[in-house]
Length: 529
Image 1: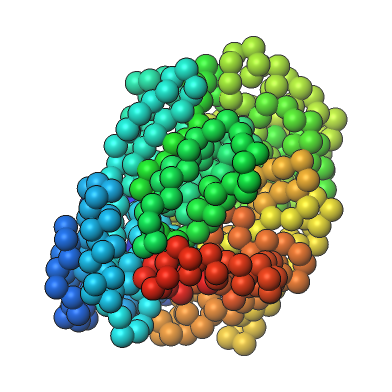
Image 2: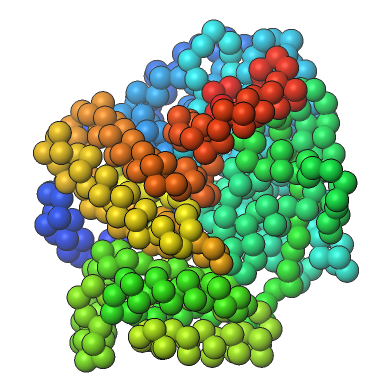
């Protein structure tokens, strides 16, 4: 069963190697395990529903609690402390588009608000009900998960939008296809959620972001049904799919999507390359991205992330041997790790790898084989489980991301990390901060920053620390010309910073768009806008 107050399946845990607590204590101080609320304690705080049970719905307190929050750090603080505050009044489980239409009709008649809910993996507050007099229905789409059609000649597949990542790939596999969209939340995120939040998978360099994969589909809104036919390309006016991509449930419910799929590759391998410095690694990654070689992933960790990953990898003897080998090659303190993936036909992948490694060597890179890459690939969906483990040791972990042009990457990285390191000064606390470049483009890259800080004895103080950290980093992003979100969407947490990116006229257009599709303001109020 899925955890009610953390990441992933209750039966799986994130295992830290011996000495991890010592590593963190040396950098930010020893953690104090918090006293978390139990499920019965949290359940006792669920109020009476303000609604009669909707069609295909329930007002069961346990279901309402499990749908009250997502996976942002404020959500964690609320759930772990039992101070959830606001709950949906009902949870509905439609199994068809007719069911969704009936639910929207019921919500209008009842004066209720509607929150589309995929898998609840949002890290910026997409699924949270807000305080207010109107009752709230959370619409869980998990029963709408079928593969509806496959056009093998055109390499198109149509799914219901509630399909989880693993189920989507499992339904494609017998046809010899993959979507290739693998966000870190892959196990607990849905196709509809990827579209609504403009998601990016870890191998987007090869497969493309969700906007490239999304060929067409259907949105059911309070104003009616928006059909988006799947064309290879069209010059027939503005692309209406772009209205739905990133709409975060404000326009309606995405019920089905046609996606561009790819034949399952004959070869895929992940390789590790070490560089003596950040400058060498960043330049190599830029040149690789601009070479347009058929690579599926480039991921460069800065020196602190590289050090942290090596320290927490386990296998201390192997890591020590690697460090000695790299030192003999002139790569020691300050080293940075680049992970590179090749995916495709055998000869194409071999040629791409050969040319990529040659380019990396010209920039001082030391190829150490596939061991690190294989380990990363094997555990890439397990990393979020470490959030549970670290929380129980007394440490909070959060991430944030942006994207900027290559000429601004270093300025952005220094500004964001510097802001995070200074943000906890009022509490005389420290923050362990590290960054990697995770999605490369010819003109720039995303920056993905992780920060770890100590949980305070009082949940309100922990939230105040997070607020200071998030505000410092977000302000640095806006001040230095980065996007407020490269892949996580806007939700509640990024909403204050959106006008800086869209401008006054752009925000007015978005508000008018929301009013057109949702004239009564039923859909996911307070998110995005």
